[in-house]
Image (cartoon, rainbow, N blue to C red):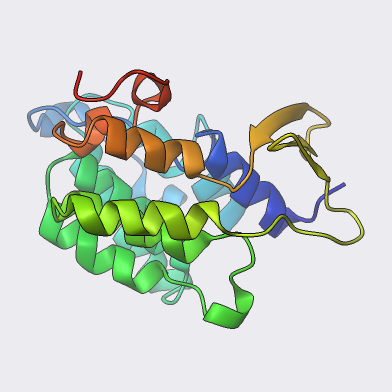
Length: 212
């Protein structure tokens, strides 16, 4: 079974772990939450629980930026250097249209080059290029991501015909494309003229979606 870092990366690739809900006009009265309880959760409960932690708050219409601030406060209290928490706050802010703030946070999410074996940094490059409206840089980042070789080693599923079958902690198995997040980046290219909240959606990752 893959170790937890690989599980998180694979979950990001299928949108189960790194996806964020879109934002609407602020509605503070609907964003009530037990801040002390949420800040006391361990990182897995706070960040990876699909129906709890910051995600439950982010899924409420109008509460995305409240969730982004909660992510910031949790990170500062517990894991000030957590690249994944930087990334998730950045995604929430990008979904809400706060592109400059999102870009600054994404720059804090890079991995050391020696540790990046799954193409995370090209994925970050591609997303920043999209937010900057730089189509040429987005294409260059996609090519760099597409060139990332498949992983090898004990416990790592093989890549067959461009897909790997990954087993997750709950015992479920799914086939996902390699390199990780290549479909997300293709979606950003296909829907380049749309807001990030729309371009991140699965529909933009389908062939033939260019400029629609």
